[in-house]
Length: 463
Image (cartoon, rainbow, N blue to C red; front, side, top):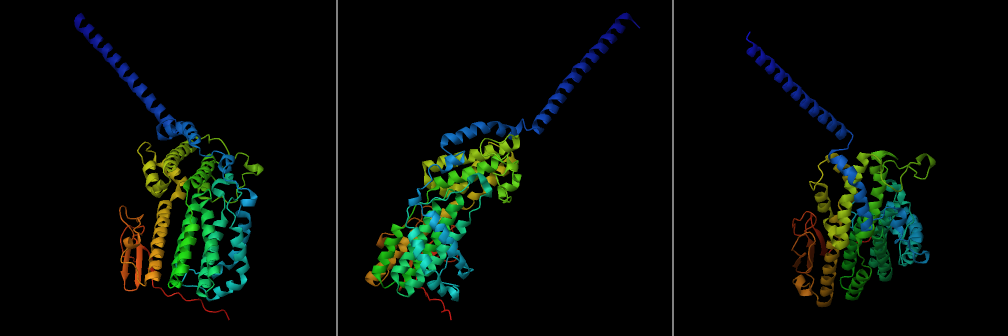
């Protein structure tokens, strides 16, 4: 072999080895980077979970700057009512006694107090008359504050909501009985007491309090429809009913409820690793006692240490901060709460579905709030138009040809840009909203409606 040819072969071999070394080194580095990346992702340092976990401290600071409570003391600081003004203690004791009559309530058609009534209902006229007098007195106090331990988080039990709702139904049924018997003063007393109970639930620092209040008010306003039918020839009683409804009216102001629910969710987020873990989000661990010595790790303040828990809590706080900020600027924006939550949970900024699902679990209590409040707005508008129509008929002998004739063309909360509808035929009137489905059923099953005439009969006598 010629020397020159041998040299070229050696050089090429050496170059080939060098290329292999370089390629091998690059592969090794890339492999190390991939391995490191997988390790860090597995350990939640990188990716959506790591990013969310790292953002928690800043998001938590924003919550504090907005004025959201991060301790129980901060939550109740502005809620406490002096004993001499607080209706809650005495009223709750009475509600426990009234609840013994709840078996007399209709099992179906909860919003129609004129149907399916128990024939034993008349015993209330004797057995509970004194209780209703006491309830009227206790609810005359202006304030409402129930001393609870909100550090129990989602394990907080609120039995008074159910008792208040049952009592309101019993009260309005009693009101109708009194009206049928000509005892108008007693009818107004029980009606006003029921409305005050609904107003007190709206002052509760929980979203469920808002929902209970809206459900109670729907029931109470349907009872007002029955009272108006009973008094359809008595313009004086109809006008008094108008005044009573106006005087007992109340605003469902969402700020307090949002603050309370925020804190309950914050407690759950702080303690995902304790008192039942994820089960606590559903309130399943009802025997948990945060003050017990074996639960010393319970976190009533601070933030969770684990990345997944921090990531979930960050998403929850981010959504809540946005909601709270918007509601503070415009309280009526709570009517669009469902859409607002959907927008924030799926805003594209975070794509980790698991974290979003965990965050959304803490927001489940918002389900249906917007529609419940729209229903409450619609019922109030319908009742105002209905009573104005009934007063017009009592004075003139006929219903107005249209709602515009009595200046009662109110907006329909379920029909953007639309108004509530009215149909007058001979001596009958039907006033309705299109309801939650947004479909106009002409006052049919899917709509919210008030009508005249109706047949309202007393229950059978107890033998």
